[in-house]
Image (tube, rainbow, N blue to C red; front, side, top):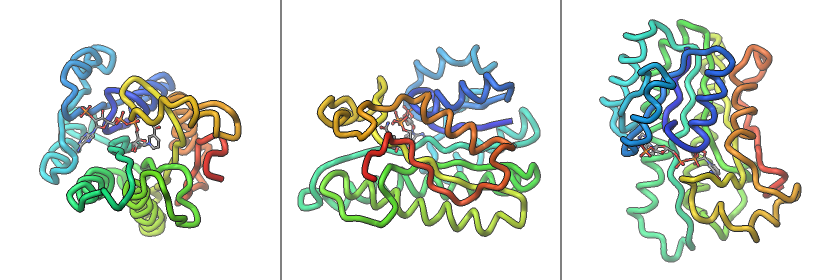
Length: 235
Ligand SMILES: NC(=O)c1ccc[n+]([C@@H]2O[C@H](COP(=O)([O-])OP(=O)(O)OC[C@H]3O[C@@H](n4cnc5c(N)ncnc54)[C@H](OP(=O)(O)O)[C@@H]3O)[C@@H](O)[C@H]2O)c1
């Protein structure tokens, strides 16, 4: 039984579909994309939930709804994570706060709510960073977003440490440039894709393949890692 948050489009949807194809019952979530959610209801047998994960109570209610329907939680994937770019000199504090609340606090709410059921199932959790977090290098592009994802990486490693004794694995997948219909405009830039060492942008399915591995028993000895899926971007 799996729950993928932020999953009615893009990477989250690709992960949800991949897990479903491998036989898991999968719950998907949306916040503002009602039409996409409606269109996916039959595919996910009604396991479609509206929740704003920046709201602690809504996040707790989401996990309770999942448990009420299926009784357990083996895998939690958090695909929420808004992006913004621009120099820090013109980035207002309110924008930094928005990125932290969306990328970091939503993850804290989700893991707090999912911790006990994941322990009960000796399950696994997966979060999304961004390529190039290793080394904590300064950035000219999307520095505030990278700072939020860096905070998330430290949380993921710390959750991995704390939860190891309970049999729960926690990992991060760090995509590079992954264009899709709903992705930020920057990901659709051909010049940017040409700067990727492998020479092409990745797809949501490329990221989903890595996610499926990290959630599977094949990765039973893997926890606390940051796995870039980025074609060598920012190596
Ligand atoms: N695409 C890339 O190139 C790329 C690169 C590096 C990292 N990543 C990371 O990979 C993850 C998935 O990326 P993506 O491109 O698939 O993202 P995306 O297209 O922006 O989709 C994320 C989904 O999260 C949902 N969401 C946002 N804020 C939420 C909140 N507060 N509560 C509940 N749901 C919320 C949105 O749902 P609604 O539409 O219903 O509002 C949205 O559809 C993110 O963490 C992102 O930062 C992506």
